[in-house]
Length: 378
Image: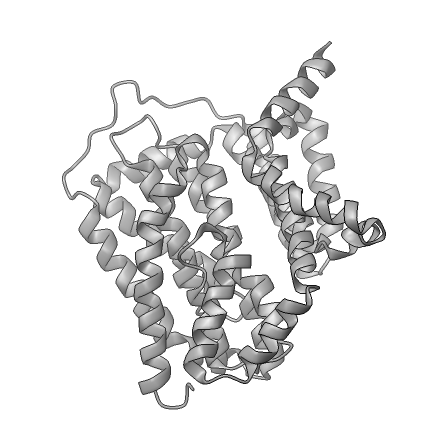
């Protein structure tokens, strides 16, 4: 009976996944027309990336369920007693962490902490999370390991880590400065008192200790390039202590990522797309820059980078374009989707795009100007 209830709950949850179902439709239709191609769907999925995301989702759920984030959040509110100060701290923390831990991992650290403040003080929590999503775009573009597209570009460019950072620093500094100025302008500087019902929740110390230990082991597994083994260890450890916790993990998000990989491969196989990419490679710098930003908006900047590297050099122009493309539409960067999924019901796409689309236009202009005036970039 509990199993049946769980299955029915998951089925009901799946019905609400409109974005997932929209991604599923092209894959199903293509399989009906080309049934043999469906056998290659598993090969289109980046399994190490999916395993990394699954482990981070499970570990984040463990930290949240332990109740340890609530006291830390309250301590932050005590020292940063206004939405503006708190927002500036969270934006800077997310940006800094994304340079060394990648944008996705930075969000899995900072967003759960922010969500703990929901209901404890009169704070615009949804806006705080949205700004953190934009912060990791700004911070991660500086580092050769800050995001997946930079890893690809750095590995193919032949640049040293320091040279890559020097190449990206003008855009990173301009983008972060713009975001910080916007943060200071839109968040209130008035002190906000904790809500009357804001109390300290009990901490599940065994779960906290296990989650932290598994987090360290998983990072070691990533360093050893063994994400699948790290995922297996993470799931086994959490299941042994709190198996019901795994039912709370956002598994549909994994399906969304898997379907995105499949749909992108289908898109790349179309002759029209290949022709367009060839023509784009032979165009002028401005057209190539705008084309890479636009393609990132359509299919996300990581797969856009994969496609464009087949026909364009891994220089500053492409690096600037695909990183700028992380702003704008939610699909511009998969980190955007991760942040909004963690936000849950408050994660209105309209609210996200109200801030992210203008920042796309501003950063697009900043990137283009820097490429034209900064010596040695273009």
